[in-house]
Image (tube, rainbow, N blue to C red):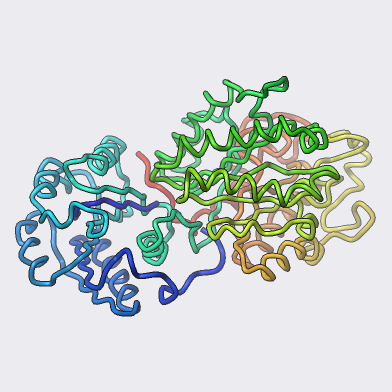
Length: 493
């Protein structure tokens, strides 16, 4: 392991990479030393050094160095007059002596004991699995006051080339939405830790979105539902696994019109988000606050933009680091973007949901999953459904309002939900076409949903009409795993 003081560890995706030349330099100073020893650490360290060298008035150098050479670091620091040190670490079993590391950190020059001249730990860089006890020890080290000013962000979140995202984190102190697309799934509070670990280890997704529509009690004073608070343990577990976690919640979801007309409910929901921000403001992982799941009904068209700005301001008073997510009115659909105004927050990503055509994806007939066998046979994708021809071009055309809005305002875009009833005729092709439309435009996504609603449980038999079946590796699963293989997801034993 290679390390230094004031620890930063990063974990990670979206559209729109930011040029390092545009970033403010003030937190780093003019001389930066990057050190690392393993092949992965050296590769990352050299990339980081190159990016730093592009910054005006910055001199960055890389030195190959490990714990055994840590005594020489003090001489190098004095010679280079470095004001910032970035240490790249691997956490392979047997490669890191935490006791020696803690002792070496405590002997570093006193000038590195403050926030303006700190040492940053970046890791783990190894592609091999990191056992949880060692990762826990690493987190404890990062919070140990004897090692100086410590901040921790886990590099596992940031894909194959995280240097630019980490540099942005170093310079701005924000956990930004990463540059490369995040690909994952929706989960619920009843998702088990075992299922979550299986998703990470076997499927290799790098993001989950917690979907929960009733976080407050239905009666005044609209307190937070204790069942939901207990269920947040699955968020904590997902963060331990190195995932980005989007917390997508709502209240009065089936009474949205009443919600927007109720000052008491709106105040209670803001208080809930403030509570959530207090819980996660100092967390080193990729927490994302999705302000409201699928705002809808007429009142949302006129009131949601202003309320979203109010909620954003409330969170930012508490948590200035983590990403915020905003969905448009109209159930989060792409055609709701004309009714949405940007919040003005620089660390906000905008999300939409895609289920078109709904009669097909939800097998509707005067209600969800009410389609008879005769109606089911008539709805085939690609084909004529719900009054028009549906094919890959129609899918892109339906997404276009979201694409245009994102381009107009220069903001990041993500697809937070998409899915279809698995037994729909042509469902696999629909699923594949939606992913292709997103991937070809650099948009990350989370399918709906992982081991939850049986109609869209893609591990169940896609030929079993209206039936729950045992789970297996279906063609849907193979498609997702192929897409997830493009991620660098957390390594879990």
